[in-house]
Image (cartoon, rainbow over all chains, first blue to last red; front, side):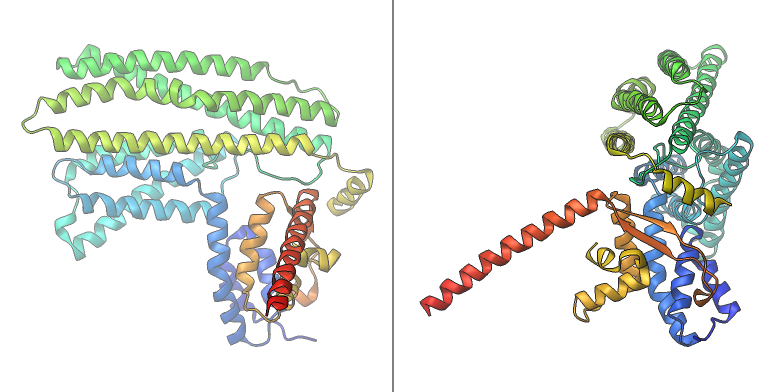
Length: 366
Length: 101
């Protein structure tokens, strides 16, 4: 009989392995166990690959980079250095990547759970920025962020992050890739879960844009500065365009599918129809959603910047950051579009679970 | 994928690692690399995995077993044909070299 792994050692290593891989990685390490030193060596050599593999699965790079870019932009206000804005943003990025790898958020969670997780995520962002500022205060006080960041920029980003998390709890809007045979029930559960996730994401997006609409209307009414009023008017028009586009999407989603029981081929046809609809939406997302929301305010910001003395360095850097942001959003959308298309291709060749496989899975369940 | 086919119903990370080490004739391949490769193959739909029942010799932990999917089988067959073609070409080239020498 092979020696057993000391419980404390196994618990310590288990704590470092992401939960999704914990069971089989600890099993493999236990099977190879000869001595505590060898176990530790094996574990340490396996861990980087396991953690990176999990990060690859749970992180959507364009989404993370876009959020980081927005955070850098918001922290880099007057009086802040670029390094001072970059460091907390990178720490937030790292925290989020690790959070997704170790506590992956499945998309199909109830609204209450999504709300709680979004609040925790918001706390993590604020905590990471404050921790970074604490360290900067000790090591490089010149990089400290100005007080206005903590009064305005950081709370605004936290709210933005909260809405983004609530709209898309898993950080990815696509179904899981799987080529294994499925039963009609499993396929229907996946299809309907995916549809519910999209509906919720659309509703939250509509809510966020309506909020922007109300803010813009408020700016027009309450602020006397003509530039601010023009930005408000631009936002009002683009928000109206976006809301009408989204409402049309929402109506078409509501028409899709019923709750009646379906056989495997019907379930597959219903799922295909839903995925194709989303592919179409994704295809035109940048043009219909990102540009209307960004175009007016961006143009007005540039116009305002051009009024300043020697404006070109600021104008060019603003244009560069804007272009980078649009590229990241477009990359994010292309990625989601690619994943949707891949699931569609898998669906075309997906086989129904045979009766023996169904019997085996029901035995496992009992 | 060859190691998965070779191990049949007993294809899980440790055994696949041993099979790969044997196939590469003692070549240094770490278990971490095997995990990464298996993850990527699964993402591409070439293999599928499932957790088996826990066993006492694994400290009460389950195994993640792997199986080749039809797409993986096709790719393996294509790759075998390519290797055979290359091998035949190489044999021919080496043969002509020998006859000239």
